[in-house]
Image 1 (cartoon, rainbow, N blue to C red):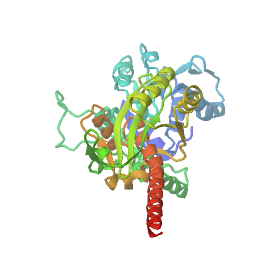
Image 2 (image 1 turned 180 degrees about the vertical axis):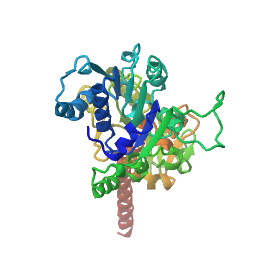
Image 3 (image 1 turned 30 degrees about the vertical axis):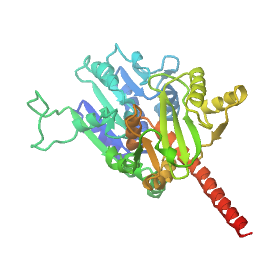
Image 4 (image 1 turned 120 degrees about the horizontal axis):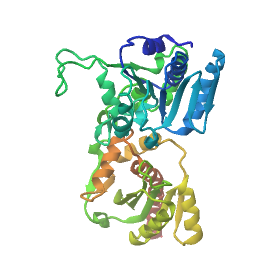
Length: 427
């Protein structure tokens, strides 16, 4: 198999290391490198092998794109069984498993384990602690190679496991404190960090163009393979928020009361939340008065949207027009008399947030303080774009982007009304 120099370094140097961790930028070529290495090891008689990825849909695509062409070049017999998700080359076998079904991983031992897209699959610490790591005990010479693009240093207010494992393989200075109970540093681990620019097969100008297309906040992570600290890199700053209690906005002219929805399809633990923010648009500012956030099936989502409309006394429901939101728009229009406004999403999430930062900085966005939902809402906003969820951020950004147009129309109409009154007085 042909490897570029850095792939050679990863797979063939420091062979005594049992655990290797690679943090890399996009398009570095790690997945293809992993595929080549698995084929080489299987041809050398290493078996059994395990490949863990994000979802089963990726596995067959990777096999067709990366594995099959190289296996055919070698001329050896092979069999890929998509129903069982395994690959047989000569007498060696590689099992392919999905991180979203960890129950299918337990009960086996492997001589070589590949964890692809580690920034995503290692959000679940139990996948490593309860499934993967115990698999290394059956063979004293088993090897684990972990790689992916970092997704921040933290997950659910704890260190991201990918970051923790990466730290294990970094060289420690002599002054570095040992872990509790250890008498020497762990020499079974080795960590690597590479940027997209380290891939010699890519044109450097094309990489630069890709970097320019990626929002500044994500370049360290997506191009340079760094574990970014979300508190330093977050777009929305904590000191931008203004707070209010009860209905202080009652002193101002209320233009509209809006329920803004960002919806999800299913209520499984790893799915996104459906979120509704009830906003008050006044002549002077925008007030977030209530937040509903829950994982729900579609019938419950529809019921919740009607309940919030009635109980929160909103004038209109705004719904992002995609996925389950499109279905919700159609059913509410067909079955109720609730005023519903579809909100089109034609930019990515970061562009939407960047476009509302002037409003946030201006002190015209108020959050109701001391509510049960207040702290989780603020924390998710300040974690963006490195946090686990961004559904509440979507409600914030989509609402403000749409509402500022209504506010502008109100201001224009108000000015026209004043001018009309002045003209009438002169007559």
